[in-house]
Image (cartoon, rainbow, N blue to C red; front, top):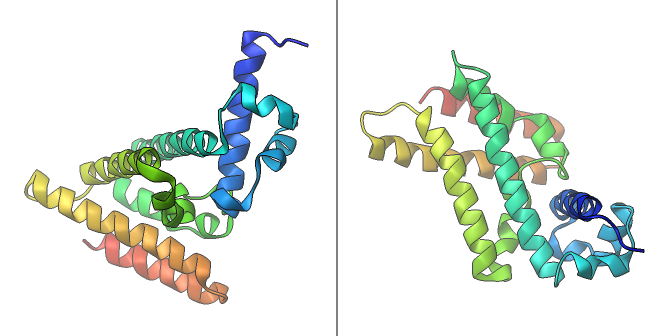
Length: 189
């Protein structure tokens, strides 16, 4: 049975969304194509009409995830014109971002796996990270663009690192303390 172009595009978007969530929850190697397709409500056989390989899916899903993350950050910043930096810190350094792996930060979830997926995946993450850094740079105090960029890159590294560490801890109170300390330190800059 043939599907319309609209349904084909809708199915592709669904596969990308489901794969993005499952990749963040389990890692690129922690989930197979059959399970992704099942979670999307589609048959395994239909996968190859959309993607040549799981690696292609991983790269395309990652592109969608980093684009969505940039849109979300931009929305947070625009939604808090009086204190965009504080709003972004509160948004990112949150309990939700720590416990909801499937919908949380793509960088905290998948960064350690990216280098094993080659140059295209690394390029996707590099471009995504630089997009996030540019948003942060715009709301970071500093005398020059170079100073704001340096601070934004350091702050972004600190933020992602804090989420990764908070996810690794077995004590929720310590996880929250780590996030709060990071928010406080970065807000005071």
